[in-house]
Image (tube, rainbow, N blue to C red; front, side, top):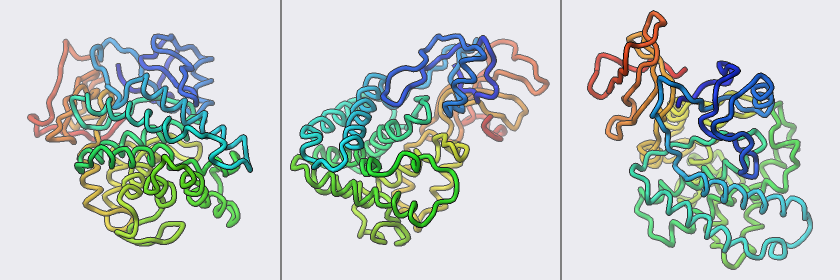
Length: 360
């Protein structure tokens, strides 16, 4: 399979990975043959890329960091919890979701089990979801990213659980923000900006009321928009004044937001997002934390289509953990536009004269 921009999808192409709804359920399943109506519908739902079946890339199977079952259960739980809070304005938090701490402890346990059984700690988030699913799938992705960084830092089980619950629920304060503002692409008024920024304090106020959710987990909601140089909100904290969990969640939040399609901008490629993060070292985030984070990011995820300096077009078939910028590439098109004769794979770690020019 390979990942293809939706503008290049043709009627008759077959989905290789499902498209998810906001609650984690499948909108279109793998194996569905796309027609013009499906393609137009997906484009209207804000989807910019799809995984399709392809003879030349047969056998290339990107493995999501999380199993489909884990992702669905987590997204569904976040969806139900957030909608419950949104629908019951004015009801005390404890009365709304009395089992929230226990439920999310179980969810993060499933995420950690997936992370623990992976052969590699490289992040590869491959789910395709409609725009309205962003808030829920985003929280799942942030939790997976935070869990990997927690493991890399040597956190013990209790620390990982505190971090994970904070990561799953860091945006719960968004339930207090009008839906009309969540995907707002234009200029914000001062009132609107303050309303959006209030989600950090609102989230903290919700989480701190739960005796089975750690106060440091609640600080992930409060502090995930604080920045290392003091330019963040709500309190303008600097450096170590920001709890380490919140620094990790904030970093994961920015990376996943950049690499996700939004109604008001194109998504960044993983390479572009990593360049952004390195440029933010010492200002938005601690530079050492950024370096640790980026060592676990797949710069060119499996199934990504790329143009090589040789003029050939290929698809990433495997990553090299010791050389993330030089993966193994399966050639699908020669410089003259013809198909390759037979199976050709180039390990860029060994072929130093060839490099990736850009993603396609």
